[in-house]
Amino acid sequence: MANALQAGLRVAACALAIGAGSARAETIEVPEGCEAFLTVQQKGCGVSHYWRCDAAPEEAVWEVHYDADGAFSLSVYDREFQWLDSQYFRDGTREFLTGEAPDPASLGELLETGRDSYAFVIREQGPDGIRDVVHQGYDALTGRTVTIDGVELLETEFSSTAMDAASGEEIFAVAGNQYVLAEERLFFLGPDQYLRDGEEISNDFSPVKFIRPGQPGFADMTPLYGCNTAEEIAFRQGSMGPWR
View: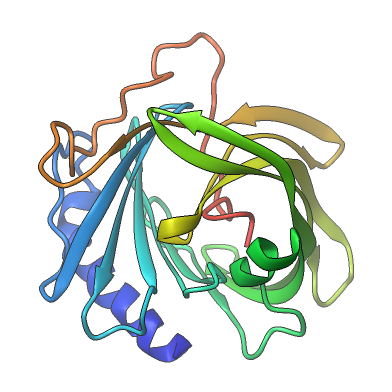
């Protein structure tokens, strides 16, 4: 299944590549045979667009993310919202799941039991070379329901660590809150604390507005919220989905 989804990501990336260099692309069209179902404006000057494809496994989902400078990344997840593959347009870096995870991320487990642990290996290929990174951590429901733009979301807390698979050295750690839209089987980022090289950064990429087909702003990839703040907020590579 992962191979089919990753192939779909490469097709979509090719379709988006022409527009990736344009920082001011306003709208987006998904690949043939696919149907977009949601656009989400986020805090921190970001907007994501989601679609599913007829030829893909049921409930697999693609997400393209734009920031103030244009197309940032394209990712694909399976129905459990296990992160499978991401392409980053700025430097050409790709991150993808390698083999069977020892403890795959499972949205179903989280919804059924209130907690899900995960451990999996992502291979990074970019300008600095190739390395395998172990991601491990957990998601847990807090029991709170949060309503944003009229949409009810389940709040989670999470903690995750990324380590170099070869050396065991910690690359980064992150913890905070995220949100689940259960009926669409989607995760959304929220407030978190990110620790790397002894420096801690606080960010908040929570959703602000949910836009469905036919509504104003659907497929509009111009971010609207938090783009003129004095504090610099950067959407980090590896941050698609719940740090998976």
